[in-house]
Length: 175
Image (cartoon, rainbow, N blue to C red; front, side, top):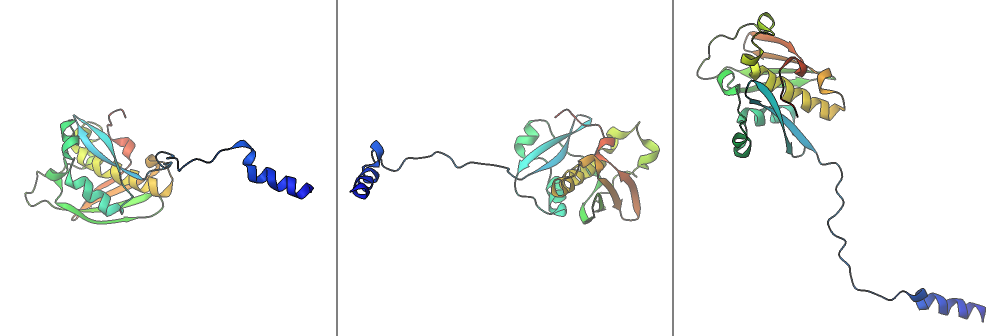
């Protein structure tokens, strides 16, 4: 008899009446992969975040070379890359170093001054190097879970080596 009473209580559901299917709203969202590209705003670099899964380092730099999107241009962002490079040749990376070889543009720009000789006086004229450096450093740092300023970026164009840089060497706009 005791078992019958316990079974009846279980079947009764303790006063909870049945309902239909309830909408629980949007699914929970956690970490969304994104990438940072650095464009020029005035005489400084400005980071933009684009929500997308992490492409390879070369694909990331190719997106940078494509320039700012129309909404980003409306915000006043531009690029200096098209004056100095014709595209991204090769990209290699290890723990905290990225090596980028860029192609010479079809319309050859004026000779590039040696960056180490001109820093800090002409940093603003070399923002294209900063665009490459900061974008590559941010991409590697995101994949490796390290600080972007710990990443060193070496840029070459043909036989010219522009040196080894960290993103912190370039003027950046507040984020």
